[in-house]
Image (cartoon, rainbow, N blue to C red; front, side):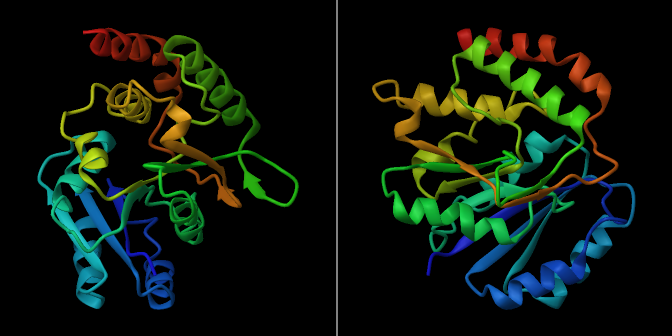
Length: 246
């Protein structure tokens, strides 16, 4: 059974961390590890995470960042933490609010099991018959507008770049995508795809990555991503474009 480590960035999530959901998941999945990265929270998140790690020290680890640095850097620091964990087959990240349920981890990683040449498998919020995707209509249309902009600007044939569920085969190629700091705190997922394509210029993106329609995704309230972030997204994307043009 493949061993999987999931990085979960946490910033002021004390009221939303579902400890029992994490405990139950780990009891039923002894092959899985969770690395929580506390991103300089000012609430009780750190204390809760330390309590959780004490409850199950074998499967729950914590990385404590003193200052808030944003989701991109929290995930990057998490990857740097597990860089030498050679017992891990796959690593990835999810959001702490569990909009993507923990059950989807094995579902996504099963595609890496079945496709040995793939370096990355990632979730996509596509509402298909037989799936349970619950997303506000306004967020859905904003997401489609953003995805279309990304596709045109960067020539990336990806339906949903921003779904917070991405997993990688644990090898030096995948780890290297996180060596350099990201330009954007929120849209770093786009940068990951650019880095993947730049790392393998001789092959098409689809030869190394696979987009998976999730079985379940539930939008949670109090998103850290605000309307102003969407309004400013064209400028953020242009900053990314300029950076990687260099």
